[in-house]
Image (cartoon, rainbow, N blue to C red; front, side, top):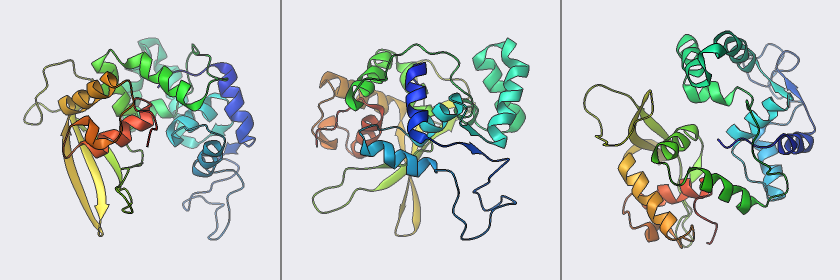
Length: 263
């Protein structure tokens, strides 16, 4: 993720205008002080995400949580646990510390990073429009294929929706990134990301049946290059010229800010 400025973090936290501490309130069914039918006192990430969208700020719930953690208005048992371990391992460097925490807690590196505050601030995003912020994200990574794949990994588990066609609604989906393996799987000639393979598994639920579709990293990069060539002004999934994968990549690239909202 790009690192937002302190002012931008402060701005988002001011809009949240709330605080969540699971030691005081637990909105999950497993929480000891939660009762069926009880409404959580704090705003959920999803409801806050919708509030932000109404004023033109489009952020994933993953990024929202990281911003709120950075602003010290969101804390959970998991985030405190990860923060404590990070202090223990930080001398090893950020990347190695995250890997060691993930291994110790048996969670993904993405989960570790999501539950840690931003370690530095280098961007001044507070006065930028939604598209301008997306362009910043795009410019930061557009020439580096390894960074693109890291970006894809960071967004793993988010919900997306294809654009649909006519009166037919789009399909909601999530994706998983394959994990590193010593045998089989997709071959890739470029630099890999530690712990991860080079394949996307698109996951949809159609007619009550879970379906998975594979998209290679090379195909993702091809679609990305074509979107770049069109300066992000991609008229629709078909314009990417990748049958079978274009509709999914189009939705993912829109969320990244690589493709502008032109439909």
